[in-house]
Image (tube, rainbow over all chains, first blue to last red; front, side, top):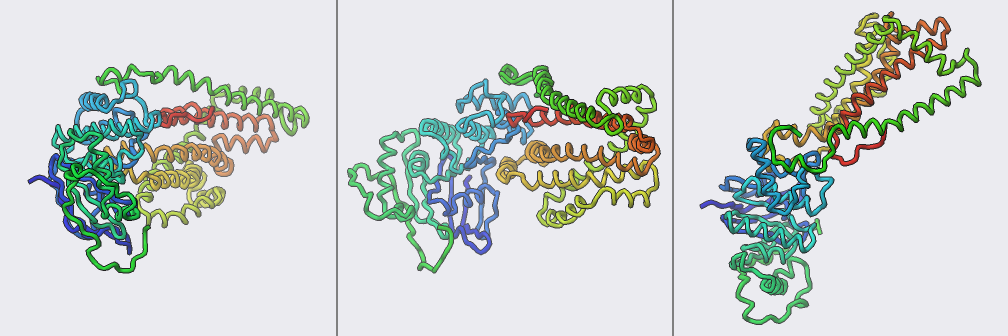
Length: 278
Length: 277
């Protein structure tokens, strides 16, 4: 079966271990959200999944034919016009110029970029427009696997909601799989089927949750409710170093059936004295 | 943008067309012309104070310049100078760009190159000239070699810095989107390196002119530098200044009619085209 699978992945930068024994598996049409505080190895894990980094330990297997990545910053080529930036991956695949421009223009319209901006350089675009262009560039290669590194963190809530919608459509209509790195619990609840919670020093899996409700059926109320439930969970509070108990609001029992804790590994081994990233 | 078919909106936007940009460039040149004229005014004032033996007035210089330029021989002399300067310059740009990019691609090579470059930059051109005279005698090779040695480290450092400062994220982007090597180079690396390289090339062009004159003055019997040596031995102040003006005029023309417009076209993506001429 097609999937991205990481088994026992660990990584060291010099003497510092940043990741240890991480297992992930993403099937088509599924979104996996990697959650955790900054510095817990989320981005490293994403770069390993993207093949940009070879892990020191463990194995990465992917049989998705095409993947596309969206970085934390839009990372558009500053010397390329908007359409050429969106068409970057198409050019790499040898799509003729006229055709890739036509496809880029269609995608630009999908992400809400106006035709009068098509010939602009990134420096002339607002931050939100650049983020949309980066997302369009990823969609352009028609990826089977999307790798997203906090793509929404620089956006205002309106834009964020739009981008969520775009991503959800890509996933549910095209059956695309996605690995979403985020530090925002609500983004994860809105978009992900699997939530993998990492804890730092070194980065390892603290807990996994499943959310089986279809993305289209997740309305705001549901998202807020699930986020609140997760925020009250001791493992989540621990992973984000929140004081225990303080946020455990009483929730109606009916709300408790969605977020399903599938695997919790709070500290599998005795704490060895470690110093490092904090 | 190319003229091949593409969605109509790409051309219908408010991008400035090239005639407008040429007009804008020429207009921005007025500031430059004004500052040159200001310099001429100061020169004129000084000349009136000091007298024609020490400093001829701009008018006298212009007169002797037009007289010189009327004879076809003068153009041959200037042509010889330009040929030597451009050979040396062209060679240094080619070699400096290639080796600089190659060295920039590896940290070890960068670190090994650094002291050598410091040495090359610190070595006075006159020392190279003496060596070149001993090696090559008084032919074209001496000024060409001296120009090459003086310009090479400048271009080399430009290419090296351009390569070293490549954005790691864009490099990863190229990798993640599986850009073929040619596209990676043309779309991701080269535009960044070019902006460093071009600035270095403009500096090197100025250096090449200075050095070629010096080399000719001491090493050859023709060229603008040799003419300067002749006017000096005749104590011909007007002639000296006329030759200097001719050479400086050529340099200004090369920079502002050729290199600067190319740079602006290449760097339109930066949004601002920099100060006026």
